[in-house]
Amino acid sequence: MITARNLTVLRAGRRLIDDVSLDLTPGTLVAVVGPNGAGKSTLLKVVCGELKPDAGTVSYAGAGGGEPDTATLARLRAVLPQATQLAFPFTAFEIVRMGAVAQGARQPRAEAMRALARVGLRGFENRPYPSLSGGEQQRVQFARALAQVPQPVADGVPRALFLDEPTASLDLGHQIAVLDIARAFAAAGGMVFAVLHDLNLAAEYADRILVLQQGRMVAEGPSRETIKDAVIAGVYGISGAVGRLPPSHIPYVLPQSRHR
Amino acid sequence: MGQALVPSRPGVLDLPPVADGDRTRQGVAVLILLGLLLVLACLVSLGVGPTGVGLRDLWAYASGDAASLSTQQRVILEAVRLPRTALGLLVGAGLAVSGAMMQGLFRNPLADPGIVGVTSGAGLAAIVAIIFGTGLLSPFAMLLGSHFLPLMAFFGGLFNTWLLYVVATRDGRTSTTGLILSGIAIGALTGALMGMLIVMADDRQLRDVTFWSLGSLGGATFGRVYSILPFIALVLVIMPFVARGLDTLVLGDAAAFHMGIPVQRLKRIVIVAVAAACGSTVAVAGSIGFVGIVVPHLLRLAMGPSHRFLLPGSALGGAALLLFADSVARTVAAPAELPIGVVTALFGAPVFLFLLLGRRGMGLRDLP
Image 1 (cartoon, rainbow over the protein chains, first blue to last red):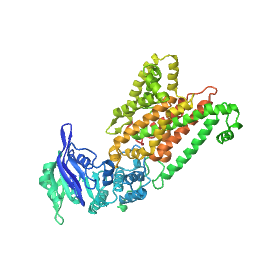
Image 2 (cartoon, each protein chain N blue to C red):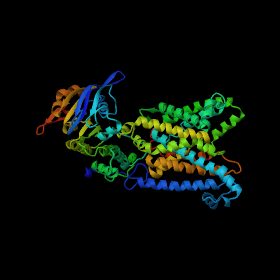
Image 3 (spheres, rainbow over the protein chains, first blue to last red):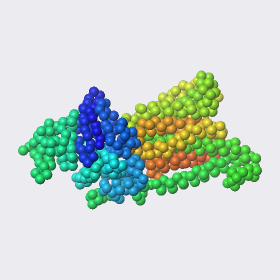
Image 4 (spheres, each protein chain N blue to C red):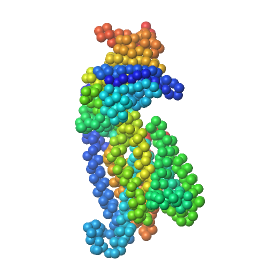
């Protein structure tokens, strides 16, 4: 369980995050959506411990109370950042092994191989990272994060995955594959916190959705309650775009339908 | 997902493939080869010169049978070649390791203490120590004895490294252009200050100062070896502790933090280590360029960029390269001696140019 209370981040007089509270409970995938500049990535950075909030607190169950130190955090959660470029030609395997070593794996080599296989990159172990396509690089980074928290629950403590736009630069098939892995991680008792641009993917995969606008949380809850016309019209400025698939009541967003 | 594999594209870069991407064995093999190369370099450095000392003589000397050597051989070995070889070992290891660490810190294969002005900062401080060591700063000079000069050079190098980091780095990222330009500016400023000081120097001091700007292992004594030993030892000892941190830092400050690395502390330690290695070597051997860039670069091609092997490999390779270079400097123009900086530049500058021209893919994308 990760609990964030009254988070506020100020930069140059602007409130990038304005009094946001949220809970990451084991077994759930939480998606953050919102327009560009809403503060989604900033919120992720604060909750994963990378950025200190100007006000508010973030606490991790299993960190022994108080502010967890860098090494403790590294065992409790892994983070997939947005696109990463490398100055030195590490191989895909070497990158992923760094994640396995970070969690103190007994057999980092086997752990790294397993993580690469999970993201469908078996056979890519020896490829120098700079020679991979953008989507392949993104999946190597995802494998690195998976190798850092290979078990959704370890020693009775749930682990967390933070994903900052995990589907950016992936083709449709791989977008679904990556989110399937994330959902399986949550279903097995882990926690997932993902910044997503694609409202349809968020609606399908997230147990709860946070809608951010100018640093404020304007809606929070299951997709049924958050991906609805009233919210989408207010946040994105397009109305009439939300539809529903009758059998499962998963809302979908079809921008073209605003012309109806 | 396994079915959805994107077919493997031919490599954009011509990097040699490794069977399973794990270069641990390759790293160990290269380290062993470098160890052997260093032994060879030591033998050459001890044996080559106007008075030849053959393998059999060295073996006899090492096994305690010094009597089988001629008096001349023994004196030359003890008073000249042994201290010179020991100094070359320390200086070469220090230069190459500080280069490798700095490139890791700046995430840039072109960051070399000599090119970005750290060496000149150490040189300026060394000149200050020479000129003011008998006057204004004499209490410190008396107190610290032979460590005074290396310590001053260390602070000079530390200041310039810190200044460079502050000026050339934004959000933990350093662009090649920013790095080189800041280095030029800092180097120019340091050079100007050096020029001012040189005008104030007397003849004896001027000779010492000239020696620094050329770089040489000449006049090596065991006193000099001991004076820099603690600095180089410090840097060699911390290598295993910063290796993983420097590896993760390649993915960025944030990713390193996510993987449990205390990034700010790591950077402070590395900056101090670079200044210690760089400053102390400048204090005893002057500015010797390109070792810090050529050795790590060649090793990355041979063993991959992981600092677990790159740092010890640089120590071994740097020491070997410097001993070979010194052997060349002593012999090609005998009885005169070439400054060793000339030899390393003749070898290193072309490699540096090759690095600039041919390897843009290795993090040099932002070069104009």
